[in-house]
Length: 252
Ligand code: ADP
Ligand code: MG
Ligand code: MG
Image (tube, rainbow, N blue to C red):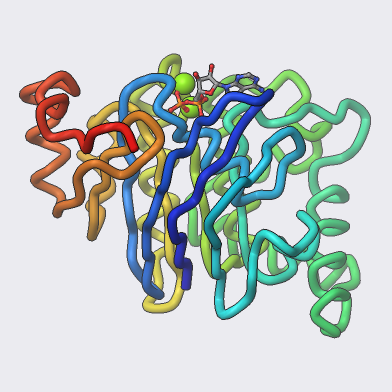
C-alpha cells in the first residue's frame, strides 16, 4: 500500500527527514509516535503533497505508483486522505456541498460517474449511521466556528465519505479532549477494513488506548528509530522519549 524508502526532506534549507523508511500493508493500522519536532507532521505533509517541502532523496510508492510525482489532487484521487492538523475554515461554503464537490472531483479523476444530490444524500445518511453522528455539522460552513471536537468529527466524516485506501491522521500535540480523541478512535475503528490502511501520527499514547495499532513506529530526529507492536506505545508512555536516546542511530 505505502512504501517509503530512505526519504530525506528539507524545509527552508534545513534537513528534517534524514533517511526515513516505512512500509504499510493493506488493512494495517500503523502509529507514528515521537517527540516534538521529530518530523511527524513534515512526513504527513510531504505525503499529502503540501508546498514548502523539498525531497532531496528517497522514494514513496503508494498503491504501485510513484507518489511524489503526483499532484495533491491526483494523490487524493488515487485514494490518499490526509486529515490536516489544522483544518481550514471556508466560511459561507456549505459543508455538504464542499464534500460532494471533493468526492465528485475524485470520482471524475477515476472516470467514475459523479453523484447527484440525491445519491450523495443517501451516501451521507449511510456514513452518518455508521459513525453514529448527527447531521448537525452538514449545513454549516466548512469548519466555520467548529470547536476542536467538531472539527475532528467532521474530519472523520470526510474520511468516511471519501473512502480512501490510506488515511493519514495527524493529531495535534495538545488540546484534544478525551471526547475528541474518542471520536477519532471510534471513527478509525468503524472505518477499518481488510483493504484500508491508516497511518496515525500522534505524540501521546492516549489515542492508542482506543485504537489498537498493528505496528508502532517511533520517529525521532528525522528517522524511524524503533518499530514494534502496540506494547511499544506503552513502553514509551512509561519511560518517556528520553528512554530511546541510547537506541537512536548515530548521525549519518
Ligand atoms: P512534529 O510534527 O514531529 O512535532 P514537525 O514535522 O512539525 O515535527 O517539525 C519538524 C521540524 O521542522 C521542527 O524543527 C520544525 O521547527 C521544522 N519545521 C517544520 N515546518 C517548518 C517550516 N515551514 N519552516 C521552518 N521549519 C519548519
Ligand atoms: Mg509538533
Ligand atoms: Mg506535528
